[in-house]
Length: 182
Image (cartoon, rainbow, N blue to C red):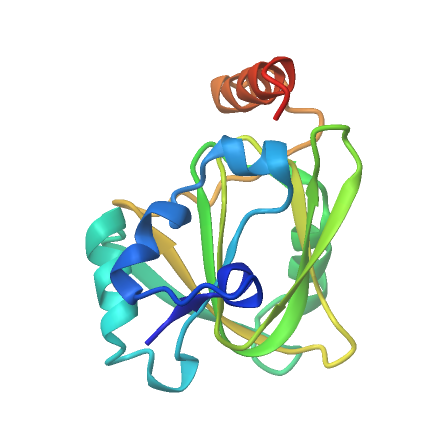
């Protein structure tokens, strides 16, 4: 059974089916802080009913697994630099850490970095249009599931990329939230 780490830390006990609304890469979460992290059963990801339910509810029809390690990833040094370059995507970025650990850095509403530690079992959804980057920690290893709605789109747009509709929508939402006092 999966759970929302923040909710559990707050003393809430959530069922798997109550997790899916928190997953969608919603810009309103960025107005409040880093995107929520869900904790799933990475040891049993192939049969995990929570992952199956999340994929069904969010229409994550495509997935693959990437291992980021110097002995496993072709063009490792180049890829690491690319992942760490500040960028955005036009679609949500969904990552589920199956093994290892690393960091997502995301920009908050004031354009300051927030570092999000990701470890085995963590799932995160970064909303379309959010500037972010990824780096490994001192273990230099992560195995992650990448999930998409439909066919995957791998294109990263390095900063500055403020003219894309996804970025404009994201920024508009942040401005509306700020004016509403969120």
